[in-house]
Image (tube, rainbow, N blue to C red; front, side, top):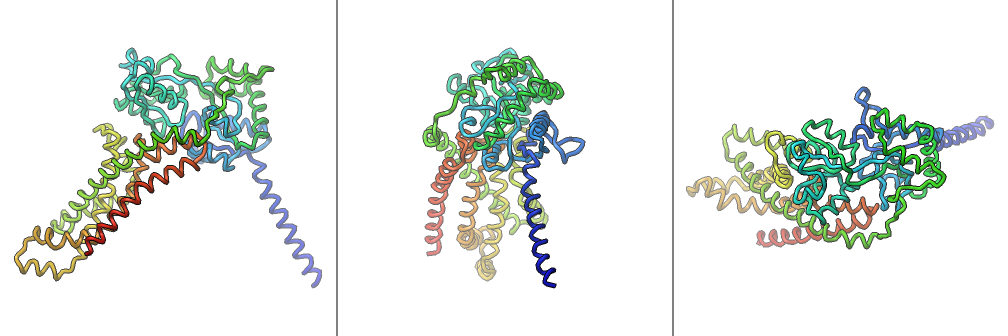
Length: 495
C-alpha cells in the first residue's frame, strides 16, 4: 500500500512533466505566420474549394520559410492594420500579407529582406485614360487609396504639391468599384492590386508609368532578429534556386523587376534598396506634434457628424414614438417592425448598405451616408425612450385633460410632452455620448473622423500608447462638457 501511495504521485508527476514538455514544445514545432485573409487573392484568401484553408502567394512563401526552419506553417488571422502590433505582442512569428517596407517599420520591427518589388500605379476610367496620366493631372480630383501604405504617403505629398484630394478606404475592393461608378476619379495602389481591380471592373484601365516603387517584406518582433536572419538566408536561397520565381509565376506575378531585385540581394555586397537603408529618426512626441492639427480637424468632423446625427435621431425618434402611441394599429405595427429591424441589425451593416449597397441606385456622399446611418440607427433607440416616457405619464392626468376639453395635441404639448422630456433627458444624454463614440465606425465608408485619424497616426509611429492617449483625451474633452450640461438642464427641469 505504501508503495502504491509512493509510486502514484511519481507517476502523476512524470505525466505532468511530459505534458508540459509536449505543450511547451508545440509552438516550436510550428512557424506561426500572421496575415489577413480579407485582403484576398493573390495575397491570402480562403480557398473557394475549402474555406477552412487559405491560399495565395504569401501562403506559399510562408510554407517555404517554414520548410527552411523544418517546421509546420500555421496561419494566424489578424486584421491588416493590426499586424505590426500583433507581431510585437508575440501573436505570431512572422507577418506575411503584402506588407510594405518602410523606414518607420524598420525602425521598430525586425524586417526581412524584400521578396517582391511592386510599382505604385494609377488606375482610371478608360474614358479618362488620356486626361489623367500623373498625379499632377488630378489636381482638385478625388484619388482613392488604402491607409498607412506607400500610396497613401505619396498622396499626402500630392495633396500639398498638386491639390489632389486623398480618399482613404479600409479595403482594396471598394476603391475600384467606386472609381467605376464615378465616386472617385482615380485609384493609386500597387500594381498587384491594380491588376486585380481592373479585372473585376472592365471599364477601368491602369496607367503604365510608375508613381513609386515599393517592396513586400516579412515582419518579426524587434527582438526576434535571429529568426529574421535565418529567414533572410532562406529567402536568398529561394531566389538563387528559383523557388520564389516559381511561386510568383504560378500566381501570374513574375515580371522583369524581380530578377534585378534578386540579383542585388544575392550578390556578395547584398545591397538593399535605398528605402531600406534609411531609418526614421522622428520620435513619438515629434510625430504627435505633427499629427495634432489633423487630429483636431478629425475631432471637428466627429463633433459635426455627431450633432447632426443626434438631431436627426431625435426628430425621427419623436415621430416614430408619437406614431406608435397615437397612430392607428396598422401604423403602430409598421413602425414597431421598423424599430426592430434597425435595432436587430448592426450599425456597420447599415452603413455598408447605405454607402455601397445603394450605389447602383443613388450615390450618396460619404458624409451624408454616415449622417443618415447614425441618425436612423439611433432614432430607433430614441423612439423607445420617448415611447416609454410618454407612457409613464399617469393616466389620471390624461383623463383630466380630456375632461377639461383639451385635444390630443394640446394634451401632448402642455401635459404629456414636458413630463416625458424630463424622464427622457438622462437616457438621451447617454445616447448622445454613445453616438459620439460610435461615429468611429464611419471610417469604413471613407469618412476620416477622430478614431480613423488616430489609427493612421498609430500605424505610422508603430505604437498605440501615445496616439491612444491623445484620442481618449479628445473624446473626454468632447463628452464631459456635454454630460455636465445635461445634468444642469436636468436639475433645472426638476425644479
